[in-house]
Image (cartoon, rainbow, N blue to C red; front, side, top):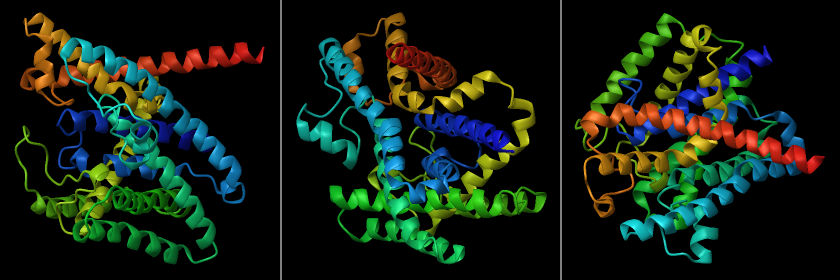
Length: 360
């Protein structure tokens, strides 16, 4: 059963990272469940699903593991992309990042993670680290209370985060507080799902499907943007705490999107469980998150070269710009997923090789 759950979570992570990449290409993989409305919440949810109770009594081990798995590779990627950014600046005349200072490359990762454009999706990593540290502390304090009281505490935190973002000036520190409060809710929902729902209640029946579809259809009334060129509706931008809908809508659309993702994995798991590419993808989501904008950047450079467009033109657009999106979006998506997945697999093998030789 544990192996089945792990494999299921691996496929869920694969779906989650595909939602992130497709979101950056401005199309939805799940129809009326726009990716900008839940994909980051889905990653926090997965982290909650995988949280082990043993760490409630072994804080030191938990912190060590999270530093090793989240922060160490973050700073290694920062060094790599700083070098890449300097090289690109020589070619395009534009430095794709913040000025090189100790503050920007040590403190900024914990404030917004946008010190370098090419690796800016990794803002999620430092935010996840901080969220998990706070989650561990809160759960240690609350674990003797009834599970529904604990759930209410995290729901209040999540909704209050949206309220704060609307009524107070978003200073860098408040931005961090708001993101943490909001993400804590979904870490606990993942924890709650694995501990109290997964093996006790079937929430993937036809009735549940109908109820979620109806709810999402109602939420769609809050859509304000129907133009794919400008973005997709029901979206919120967690990194900048931009919630443009009423307080409860971002929470509900996150929950419906997470349910739809779980449902999709439940339906397709028997057919996809042995697809090695998807298992590999789910195991290297960190590397895909880190590298997909750079791969898109290189694909754009290739298209520009084929069409005789000077590289300096690239500097006139933001980091998410792709060449001729009407024709190329889906090719970008496929190439990016393949290249970043196998890059991640290669890096994991290289790490194992180096560690084995150090040990010997």
